[in-house]
Image (cartoon, rainbow, N blue to C red; front, side):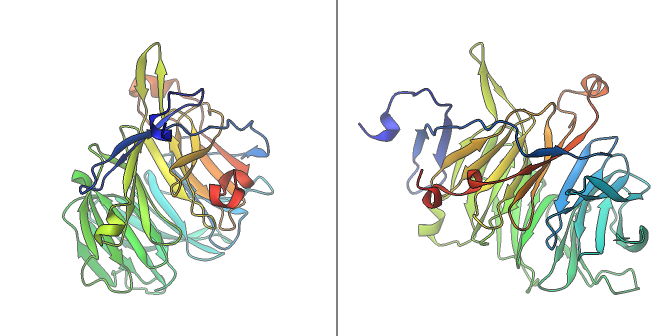
Amino acid sequence: MCWWESPLPRWSDATVTSLAPARNLVFTFYPPVEIVVMQEQTELLSPPFDSISSIRFSPFNSTHLLASSWDATVRFYDVNANEQKAKFDQRAAVLSCCFQDASHAFSGGLDTYIRGLELETEQTFHLGNHDDSISSIHYATEINSLVSGSWDRTLKFWDPKSKSSQATSSHTLPERIYHMDLVGHTLVVAMASRLFQIWDVRNMQSPVSQRESSLKYMTRAVACMSDQKGYATASVEGRIAVEYVDPSPEIQDKKYAFKCHRQSIDDVDHVWAVNALAFHPLYNTFASAGSDGMVSIWDHESKKRLRQFPKYHSPVSSISFSHDGTKLAAAICDVWDEGDEASKQAKRPSIFIRALGDEVKPKSMTGK
């Protein structure tokens, strides 16, 4: 009997669907899932008062973390000291934040402004703006530019040293920008209408590729592989798709999608949105976080779930690996999935920092 024909074992299951049209395979695997007891985990003091839109570890220091929030603040933490080192008050909800270097960061949100943040002095400065809310920002180290995406359907590049408040380049996209991720020179942009564009930030004359999402429902998250060969995307309907940049048929045959963040309760299938994805910087495994309050670690090469951590008190809105891969930050807060009345009863947001070990290594490295 082949493994995909074996009867349901005692483990929880995950269904994987190949997206390659030439092969059109549908199969189910049943990986062992180890629930890890909450050890080596710290809850940060002084969390935001409203839902957390984004958390980002510094790419230079594994103890420094930024958190942007709907309470119109960006907070800068030293996670080892469990200390809020700075807080930046803004005029409206902040949807995204990122580091430039050890002492500078940026933010953007509903007020349409991109602000530079001086982490040591708590001073801010105006870098530029869009015509509508800014949904995502990333700093492109390879070209020393800030990249911003907006609901105004533009992708803009900024020189942080410029005093002109004008973008160095602006690119009109076919739809509103909801999410972006940038690793090295590879930028993946997720838009409304389930559209995606892949760019090489070193050459912005035209996108490398434009695609429609493999998933049927609205995109909730996107994350680039650490080796820049592909990316993962997630939807509100509890599914993740693993995609590859190389357009050749033999590479595109490798892409697939699977169900996750679901649970059968009294024979009823409950489905939660997948709110966040993040690839491990060293091992290229990835984490998913959902409105079910769960965080799972996946090996996309072997198509197996490696770990599932215990459930948090509320949905997980954002996650981030430290640059050395030793920590995983998780933002826990209400994400309005249950409507306004449920939001009024929601607990105050939390940020947890988890120390990591072999649970994030792929099967090929652990031999398990």
